[in-house]
Length: 325
Image 1 (cartoon, rainbow, N blue to C red):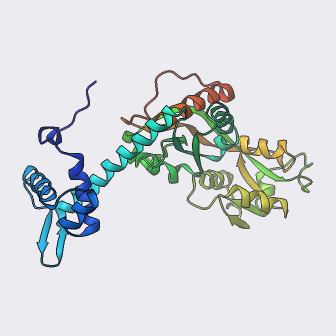
Image 2: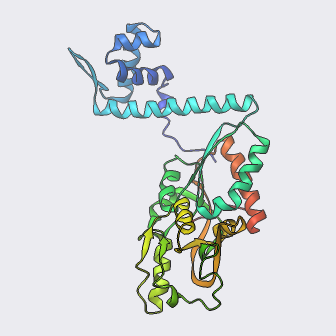
Image 3: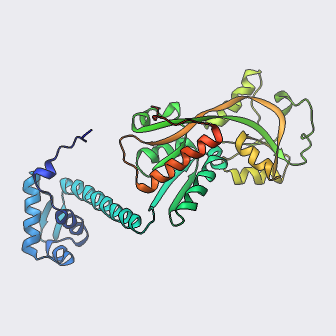
């Protein structure tokens, strides 16, 4: 389907040199220095600027004895000119990378559960095929990362769209993967490790390290105690940093609540131990999230395909057409 553009810039034959002139004018402060920086004559630069102002029907710069200063209209055009030039530069870098047999770079965001399971598997397969592909991985909570996806700072996210983030639902594409059960963990050799009949009522006075108040995980955990008529634990250290959580657990008798996949990784390497108690709560399902109506770069497409393949192996997720959030 053909994209819908206003096409004013096509009809007006907007030139790349006009965009370069706008960006350089802001830096140099007058037409003469901007023209010199771009290797053109001052009359040619003045003509390009006048053509652009006539095309838009507004003055982009105020002419003063002390130089030229962008008007409000000029500031808008300069900002968008920089964006266009930056996108063209990225396009050139991607094409150069592809010609060299590489695949550019991609930035992704992942929640901890995915970072412990499918994402390493996907990235290992990508790096085996494209060793010089640059991949940037942000591990954070969904509420932090989703706005970055909507704004284009992250190309792909493995996480969830929270109920309080309705404003982003129309801007992203969501492909469901799996849900996220939770469990209680402690250090290896913890006094409660061999307890056969642990209950939440018996753990309410324990020392905990938990995600901060306001987070989805903390809300779900606190509600478990409210449902049995108890106040939630009060002896708490608040952090969502998994390095800090594991370090605190290893140096104390504190307890923590972690996604089962994360806990399984820690237990596999003999770091932490899952305690024999079932939590009647879990996190919402998570999935692969990309921007709606946005063409992924070649690098991002490679990573997206690898994530889907890894999800099929780990969760048995069949991928057909992407679902709406």
